[in-house]
Length: 203
Image (cartoon, rainbow, N blue to C red; front, side):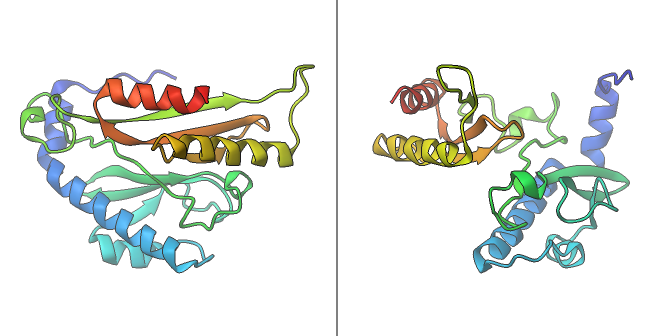
């Protein structure tokens, strides 16, 4: 299926319909609401009506009929356009996290384009905070995959070594049985981020 990139005219029309700052504000409100739910320890599915009230926009999911145990994407709508707020994987890959804790924020702002890049806050070209995502595959020397207990041992060891050098990674299981995904929090400067990411891996 062919999915052509949008034209400049389409991008400009989108950003005029949904100002970039409004998207930033709504994303922060969504993240705050999800964090509050996560901190409460609630194991209930996310209440889209309550989230919509908190965010101030209608919030839907990409797969509206999917049960809470399945993966999904959370969307907001304004002026006939939608944008992504966050996503979640299925319960199988949440490593025991509650539905709220399993939500991963989506940071891309579709209203930032070539006409307003110089005046936007977060997506500047000068001093942009960079994070890192590492996909790690674990295998024994003879080629067979690790047991779940061995995966958890690796995750704990990786976190402990990373924290010794000031890195606090978020480590999650991947869909593949022998893979883990490590997210390193953003920091200013590519050189610093790359050094800290590789240093935590080498140790």
